[in-house]
Image (cartoon, rainbow, N blue to C red; front, side, top):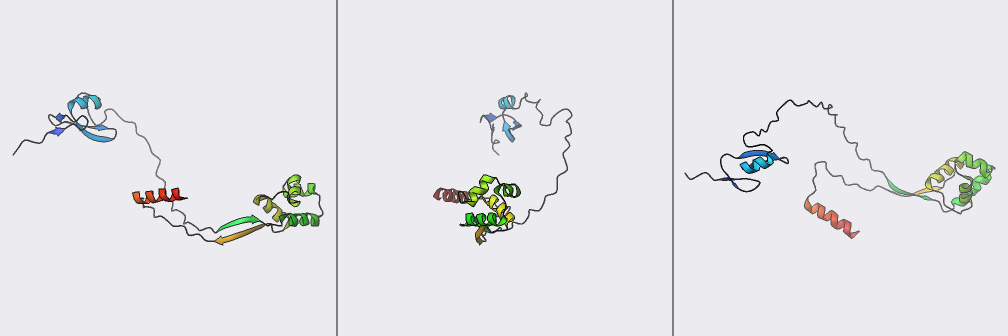
Length: 177
């Protein structure tokens, strides 16, 4: 039988005489020569011990919380809300019917007098929030919803790990847009 194959230091590459030393360096366990052992092991050969000496403080950890089951993904219909074209006319007529002043209405609805007047005279379109307030107060229709179709959402299994090809496809798809 021939001689045993010499071991080499995993840090400097020098051949190791004797058994060598195992040290933990940045989380990896490596086989090193005496010189690297002194340099990186922090202690001279023979004095280094992997097990810490002295008493260690006990750290109490909170009990692990039970994992909650994820809620099933509910498909929401995708639709757009738009203000009707003749909003100004509808609001103006509703104000006339109420027989109240802009000041009274502004307090009751929760919109400023200027906003109320601007919307009623068609100077500006109400926001969806403002339109909801007006709809509720005057019991008129100002918001129309369109395009209520269900969009399929592809579900990805929990244990799925993307491949390099998937990532390349994602990148390419983003670049095209």
